[in-house]
Image (cartoon, rainbow, N blue to C red; front, side, top):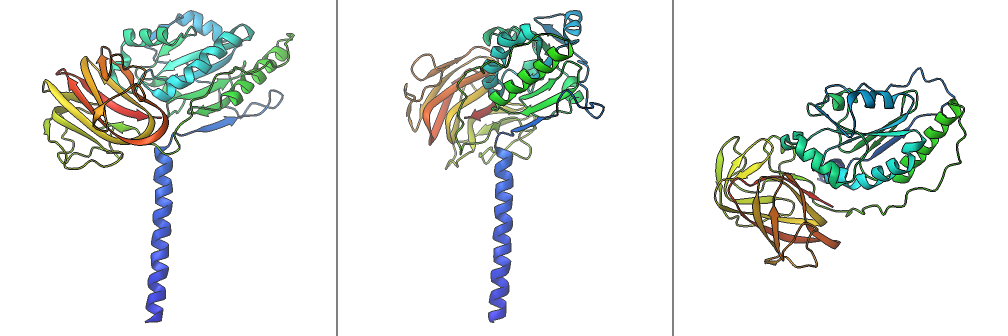
Length: 365
């Protein structure tokens, strides 16, 4: 009997440990991926280094022409920023990148924004032009609508920054937000290498750009996808009706609401990227944990926001809330609906008016 108990206890410990490891693994998958790699110095043999791939399959050029960009790349230190305009993680990096362009463009740095879309509406030239103007981007941007440049870099993340030295060798790779001071020091180092190779006088490294970095909540709800294809292996739709590919589903009021799951109410058509409201009105309920809540939407609608059963107040209102607890959706974009000082758990209810309204994701900070 004692032997059986010991065996059972040992087996239990193994199972618990295994579940713990899985839990850590899944948690890490839910967190923003961050990785950094800087390769070597300019004096070493570069024969084993990868070269920056050519910019292939470009749909549109903004702030430049193909000929001008090709000429600028020659002999420049080039920062390739892979981004898309409805990605909140990408948006948070842009002030730093814009500042680096202002500071180092005259010293030999060329920044190229590689706009690789996540959603179909991000392929629209007008939408990207609006975003480029909104965020004060003056450096060249290439629209990588078919993700050919994305594939050439063997990339899988938004945002991602690669930096090539003046000879075209990739020397730095940064995934995700953060690491801005380190990245800027790499820029300075590679500009110094360039100046030395060209026999130019260069001033010693100056102070770094001082922009406050966004502080994420340590424990926050993961990104939630409304499209059935995008939600594969990360399905957080809590409604019993579930996803039904290409069909219009009448979602009922849920009996209970679980943390980190969303619940549409009303008639919604299921698409691979989004859900579209078919009825004139509909609702979305979500229990989340975070400081900030953002939604990615398309078409037009009027949204009324409630938090914990009460109209949204100024204490928690996001930057895109313009009138009390109301949000006007006027373009295909990301909207900030909740902005709180601290991370906490709340029940949010979105009352939507406007058949044709589409929602793609919730993102959190």
